[in-house]
Image (cartoon, rainbow, N blue to C red; front, side, top):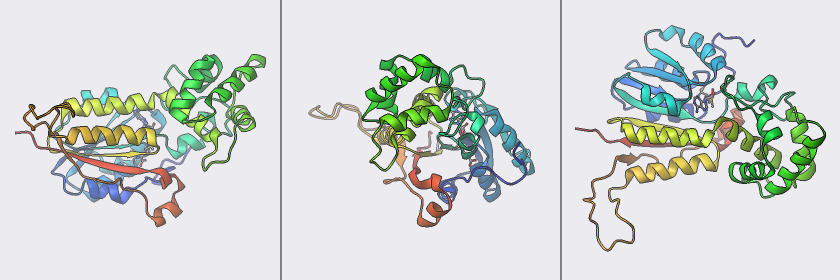
Length: 312
Ligand SMILES: C[S@@+](CC[C@H](N)C(=O)[O-])C[C@H]1O[C@@H](n2cnc3c(N)ncnc32)[C@H](O)[C@@H]1O
């Protein structure tokens, strides 16, 4: 059991940039879609007296930890267990002045071997929500070769996706693949590892994305925001790989567009008043040298912010 006092098992990435992104918000609620260990949320509550937090996480372990960590701010936070795409539309607290998400897994989820996220795990689990029906074991031992190959190609961008899927099918005909160790050994044997990231890392990423429907969740969150259009709110989203970043970047771009006519149309007929607001980060904010040295997880973090315009 982790110590649940003030010591966090997870260092929040781009902490200062997140605080700055919400520094000009009016009094109201920030929805922290990925509460985790409340690193960002506790920093926001400490820094800004006029803000409250609505925290969401699908991991009960993270919520229990955060509940204790946030105890000094009782009355200024509400916590929800669930996935952010499904929970956000149900949130009644108003006004919403900010939305934060720090996608992906936490350090504790990665480090705890029994959660089955890492190369050294004795299990294959990878569920952020420990009550969710699909585990990494199910994916690895029951998906067809085509389906495995698809997720390796699309969620891991692994060039030897087919070869890897074939090796997994072969290995599991003898005995089920039951641990992270066995799975990473298979990948290491069949994949060429000349690049910056070992393909076994990409394979784990791909399986994790599938198990937790991570890209579907991000799209769901963006859809929910598009429907809700929270008046005057700042949306700050931190991504960790190009698949996530692409979804955020493209959606922010679409939201900012004034004209929604077909790009091939000869002239504009839409009235040019369709913009939902403004992209605040022309380029994503990334970690500086100091943060990179202190927290290796910040290496691939990118923060993008969008400002929804005020509705009348
Ligand atoms: C990177 S951690 C967040 C860390 C947090 N910002 C902090 O400073 O402590 C991501 C957290 O989001 C949660 N999470 C990821 N995807 C989620 C989703 N779709 N719905 C709800 N929670 C999610 C994970 O369970 C994890 O606890």
